[in-house]
Length: 111
Length: 165
Image 1 (cartoon, helix red, strand yellow):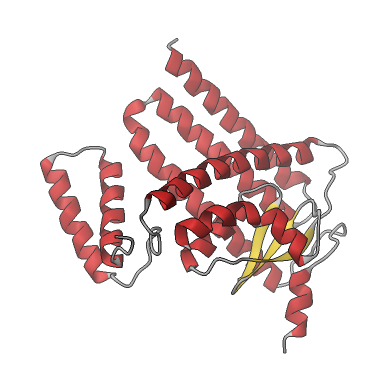
Image 2 (cartoon, rainbow over the protein chains, first blue to last red):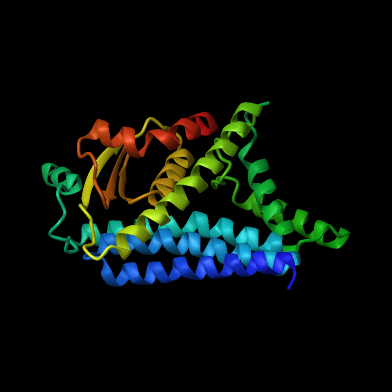
């Protein structure tokens, strides 16, 4: 077992752990918005760590993996934002714990 | 020189992606990349690139590095926060959709701000309306505009303002 191999393996396990937490978050969170929150963040870091692990194990892939990471960083939050917006516009149910919704307040004021 | 023409930026971005994908600087790869990138840059010269509106000065490059470090730290904090919430049996959340305001003017700066907010602890951009951003917050600590802006936006705005200001 080489040193980069061990580090790469650790990254892969850590990445998988965050992906597992994302899955758990999807099950446990009470409404769509909170689920998106859990999903987006944990999958972003989980995937990045997995890519870092792959880069340690296969150094010749590093540049490509870096590019994949960049695309994930840019597109993952955009897709989540668009999903959340679409859900809000179509009136997706919100958890009872939700305290304030400024967006509803503001859209109702407009004609 | 602070203003680089959009077409040159697009060309540079495309060529950089091509070289990253190929992972080689061999002559034929380089020539194909330059020709293709030039062709696309001319066809789509009105398009945006991640560098649109970015001023190239030492100060902005320094700010970009600071932004990257701050962002990665926030991303890790964000994951630990979600992990803690998800693993606590009582599921301690107090969600709210709050409204915040940004001083950023450039579209690219606002896009990066919205993206960064989505990836930082407990916040998710739901809607953008001009300078107003509506944020879903898992553990809302403040619901009025100024306090929420200070908590959510201020950290990133500091860097993005210099980069795209």
